[in-house]
Length: 339
Image (cartoon, rainbow, N blue to C red; front, side):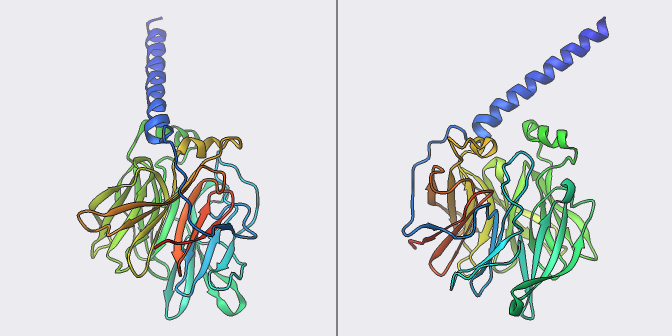
């Protein structure tokens, strides 16, 4: 009887703890209290042919943008088996596959794609054959440290940094993990010679990218509403430099090759993004960070919408005076930039 009482009290205490965590996650972490003010750019229009998301986008130096579409993620809507698209920002020509990062060596473009077959994580490497407008499969990379890969940034033809957005691999534990506020997510460096955890302490490590001089990495700790700046050491291990508050749940990071500015696709209200009520859809927000390595980085909201134009933005990138905004599972938008 005594054991039963202790067990009951333990279950009750756990329920209270989870309840408190849920309330915290509901309001402060998900930013469910935010009131979004519309902030539009001129000449915005949806990109023809993109109906089922453009969760991540990478633009090459020549203006060719690779869009990852048809994302399937547990708990989020999915409306298509579309494998992906490309968009030429110079002539609006379309078609191809999906991408998370790219690396160019001696003129050859290698595309790195995060794949989740049967809920597991692996990275596919392709070579872009420009004359045929096609991808040539190179290899698949799997490793026990790459267990919950969210995003990658390539630093060589077979090497990259990757974020793990969960610590646990069990489905139930992954669901509970955010409620416990466990800073157990990490960044992993992979090469054929070395695989190691190089940074930790993230609540949910999401997007990752690299500075133009390749000396710093930027990681979106989405549940903390921060961009974490890390310096790359000679042994590939990362040292913490600073954290920049962005006031939104920022997903993927794109970096301007010339200015070094960060462009972030963000979720202004995380709760709406998770539950996806068609009558009250998730909004979208694009944030730009200028001079991120200075003492006073400038954080600016470039675009915002309540979901009436574009739903659940996850990435934003600029090229040639145009801003391209992708979403988790809906459309993609292109606008003129007011720079």
